[in-house]
Image (cartoon, rainbow, N blue to C red; front, side, top):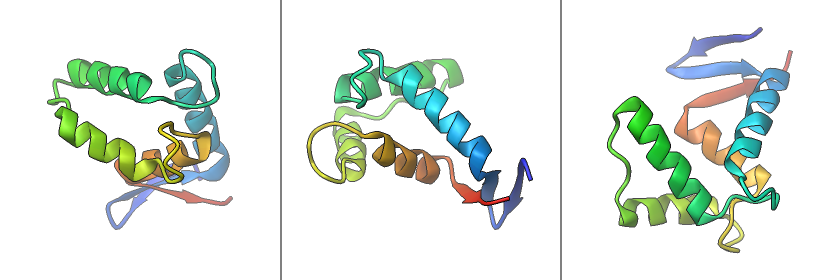
Length: 97
């Protein structure tokens, strides 16, 4: 199964999702630290907003998003935390083949 929908969620095969997730994480992690810091996340959200003509979050909204997904409160988003964030923000459910 590549993708489909169920109850408003996008269903993606686990292997496909991991490929997308890895590519997205690597493209956002500009300094290749293995984490996404607040500046990198801000830059990608602003870029996404410009490309899609969607209003970017305010500083307060951005801070709330960052704090929500920074589970261990180390002020950076790990790959695992990024996976949770991407799944929730894009309404994705990962399924095993």
